[in-house]
Length: 317
Image 1 (cartoon, rainbow, N blue to C red):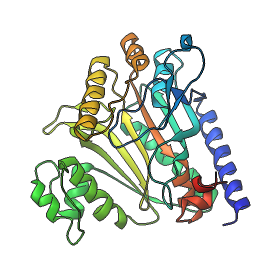
Image 2 (image 1 turned 90 degrees about the vertical axis):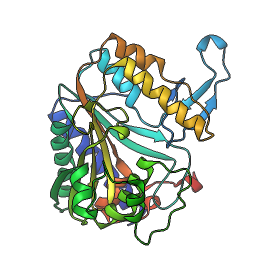
Image 3 (image 1 turned 180 degrees about the horizontal axis):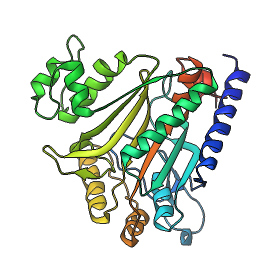
């Protein structure tokens, strides 16, 4: 794919996305890229910068957003209603064939919806994007538990860590310090995900409560997080939730993140007090999802190197 073809495909996709949401009366918004708060998630590293202006402007250290999630939720709490943002986000770390530290994310929220209803809309958007390049895809939706039972013959909620390690087969992993959820993630990324058919949309929903991130927990036996991930072929494209609206629980999760960061030798990060205050004022019941645009473009184009879809890759920026 030439550079012009890559840029033209991106432009066509942006047009499709905006028409898709305009038809559904979902408002496009823009939110700040710099924030006084950071993402506390231990597996995500943020870029930071320093503001050199007057101290009255607030905290000098600012963080480049890893997603637009927190400010979008503040808009929901302010009564904006269904909204989306298509914009740049930043994550420190890997750069190469599959990752670029600066990339584009589409994130949207639907008031009064749960994660199951949002799954349907996300699948429809992916199918419309595929139709744009003359392709179709089947759909396979299953619970997290069904995924592991069908592919590996184990129960991810009750299998021992030794059983999880054995399920990796001949894949060798240095396991020092890894916890149960780490082994489950490795099984998905190394054993299960690579086998997904190229022309199939795979949706995995109802994850372990320990992997709840910002999702509501449903009290079953065992409890599950009302979360989903969507894959096209072997690429993970989207991560969505029936959103947590409780400010106390949200604050506790931020604190738990920072405890995990400290135990790993990572820096503890400032939490988003503006988000917690907005949740305290009341955020409506809603579902939200984030979708990686470059990953989708890779699927649409058949390119296996993210750098082919960028005007300038990180090394050349």
